[in-house]
Structures are given as structure tokens and as C-alpha cells.
Length: 91
Image (cartoon, rainbow, N blue to C red; front, side):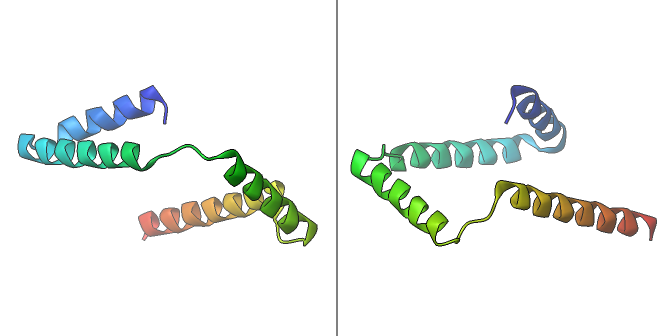
């Protein structure tokens, strides 16, 4: 997420949360960030090679989806959500 987006989110939270809500959120965000850092570990070369081998197997078996198809589906979903939102606002 960009710094500008984060700053916008922060400004929004400043204007909507009470001081107690801010403290509660800060405590939970810090605990979650600390837990995430502890759980991350680098992959071994064996793990990386196994992931590559599995990907190549799936591609050879035709078990993958072209990135253009993925983005097309995402675009359709976004357009549908925008349509539903516009309809809901009109009603």
C-alpha cells in the first residue's frame, strides 16, 4: 500500500475513532505485526525447487489459468460490484 494511501487511512481513522478506540487498535496491530514477523522464515533452496517443479507439473497438465483470463474475471467482478453499488444507491 502506498504511503499516500496509508496517510489517507490514518487521517480517516483520526477523524472517526475515539482515543480509546485508537489505543485498542494500536495494541492489536502491534501484536499482529509482531506475530507476523516471527512466523516468517526464508525458504530453503529445496523448497523453492519443489515449488518450481510443482508449478511446471501443473502447467504441463493444463491445471493453470492464463493471467489475462484472471484479470478479465477480476474486471468483470469489479464491474458487477460497481453496478450493484450504483443500483443500491439509486434505490
